[in-house]
Amino acid sequence: MNRSATRSEPIDFGYRHVNLRIGGLVATRFSIRTLAVNAVLAAAAIGVAVLSLGFGDYPLTPLQVVRAIAGQGDDFHRLVVIEWRLPMAIGAVLFGALLGIGGAIFQSLTRNPLGSPDVIGFDAGSYTGVVITILLLGSHHHWSVAAAAIAGGLLTAGAVYLLAYRRGIQGFRLIIVGIAVSAMLGSINSYLITRADIDDAMSVGFWGAGSLSRVGWAALVPSLIGGALILGCATLFAPALRQLELGDDAALAQGVSAARARPVLLITGVATTALVTAAAGPIGFVALSAPQLARRLTRTPGVPVASAAFMGAALLALAHASSLAIAQAYRSVPVGLITVCLGGLYLIWLLIRETRRNT
Image 1 (spheres, rainbow, N blue to C red):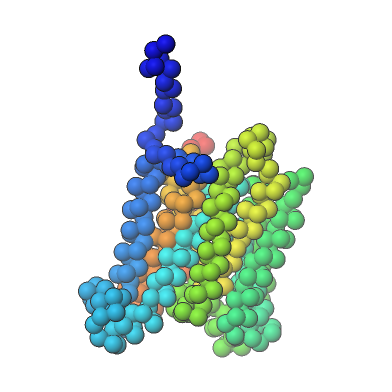
Image 2 (cartoon, one colour):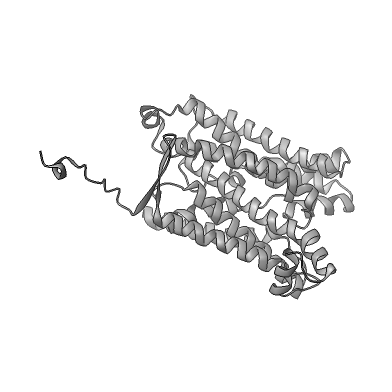
């Protein structure tokens, strides 16, 4: 028998790819285009983050920043870069990646580009927890505020899940219930702020704007540990997420139990936004826009979790650098306001695009 006749033909997956095999345990396939996009986004995020270290009340050149990171140069430059600005730059990359992961998880589970933690109302729940802690309990301690933000986000997620549950979870109903709960929490927050004294109201208002300026090494280290856990969980369940995008029955046919995978993915998605909100306040629209922008760049049929993380990191690093550049030239602007402005333009474009597609 001719040996060439028995040789199996390579499978055409419709895109250029590379295969990765590690012993007999790991075998996966990567799109070359997705790898290239991820590499470019990672380089952009790191480059912009390094560039942002030179912005501030004491401007530094990129060379001075690099020398300070390498442990060289003036002692004051190292103090400014390492102790003051580096935690914020790392936080911008880390929190952007977490928001991208959270957005990818919820948009895949709901199969809707509007399925984002900030749209569903989890950010509003975290904000309500902080408002109650500061205005009603009178506590301004960092860890009590962080714990209140996480508890508020998780409780809101549980309430939305229970209210949307009807023999299972449907994405559209989850979004509608989340928007309604977010509106109710917004009215409660506004009422409590109008009844507070001016100092507490300003404190809560500044926290609600979303800012990385409060992120130091003490707050960043727990976020790095939590982020590593979330990243590990998202990596383990990313294959199940792709199967769930096909529907529960199709996922079950391929060995994925929606009843077991979906709660874990929901908790992971909520944990991303709760962790970010606890450290920096609510930062809107990154979780909404990063997955869809990444999907368009990679041209994948589903929402790529890894690419969404890299896109989120690049977007928030860019917003953070823009915030510092504006502060250096004019006055301080919280990074959350910049993401909301840019995200609002993206949402308008998305709604117009969907309307034209359906007409």
